[in-house]
Image 1 (cartoon, rainbow, N blue to C red):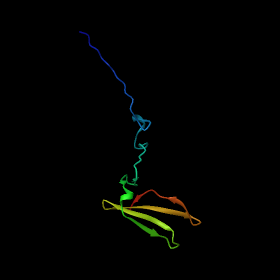
Image 2: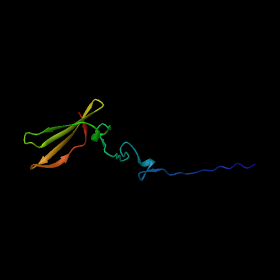
Image 3: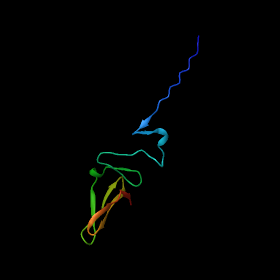
Image 4: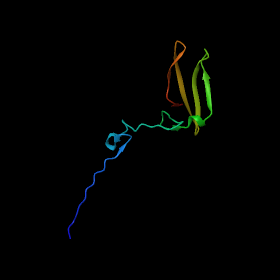
Length: 93
């Protein structure tokens, strides 16, 4: 009786990246409906959380804060000449 050896090569790709291309330096892109990834890697269900708004002296929005699992997260707004020019990622406080 003969001995047969079958070698199968399977190339696995995730979101167009080969497994050898995924690392801590090159993580998979993450997208979730109605969710955001915070600075500490936590998936925030922002639309389901109570939001607190803080304003600057001139009445512009300074930041939005949410609390999830006992931790506070803020998204801060930057302005130039009274117009929003930047919105930060959600940052754990």
